[in-house]
Structures are given as structure tokens and as C-alpha cells.
Length: 163
Image (cartoon, rainbow, N blue to C red; front, side, top):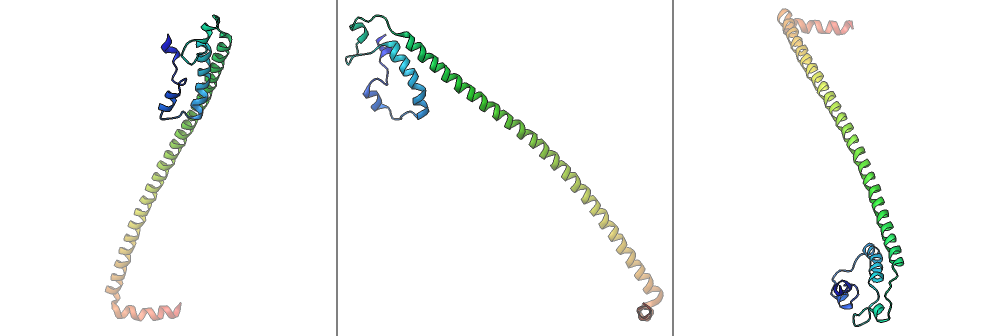
């Protein structure tokens, strides 16, 4: 039982050996526990003996220990509530992000469909333009064949003058 009373934070040597100091949040969390243990175990003298038993004090004041336990429990509940709230917020953010992702994917699919349709229309327009150019070339060749280059040259100034 004596080993349980030798708490590492009671001795100065243990503090000197500690390479890391606890953060502010850890100090606050362990402060209540430290108080509970000190009250429950009773005060110690410099030699490590129990002062309560030396003075004839056999009864310990457990009501203050219970108060500290309640305070620790309340603090733990508050931390748990805060963690639950944070988790709920995170879940909501994830849900909204998933919805936005689905909406974005739908917009992408729609845009890809429109792009494919536009590409099909452009391909069809190119085919029609190529066919029209072929017909113009045939008409030109037929005119040259029927009227000859000189006949077309004679027709061109009159047509220009009439216009």
C-alpha cells in the first residue's frame, strides 16, 4: 500500500527526471485527480510516513474527495459532450460534402453529355460543309466544261455590270 502513496508528482526528483512538461490541458485534467488522491491517501511527512496516523486522525474527510470526484466526473461529461458536438458537426459536414460531391458529379456528367452532343453536331456540320464544297467544286467543273474558261470570263463582267 505504501507504493500507491508514492506518487511521481510528489517527489522533486521525479519532476526533474520528467523530460516533458504536461500541456495546459493536461495540467487542468490531472489537477483534480491529484487533489482526489492526496485527500484520499492523506498527508505525508518528509520521511514518507502518514501524518494522519501519527496525529491519531483515523477518519479521513471523504466528503471533499467525493466533491472532487464529482467535479472530475462533471468535467469528463463536459468533455464528452463537447466531443459529441464536434463529432455531430463533423458528421454534418461530411454529409453536406457528400451531397455537394454528388451534385458536382451530376453536373460533370451533364456537361460531358452536352459536350458530346455539341461534338456530334460539329462533326455533322463539318460533313455538310465538306459535301457543300464538293458540290461547289462539281458545279464549278461543270461550268468550266460547258462554257470554257473564256466563256465564264465573258459572263463575269456582264454579270458584275448588271448587278
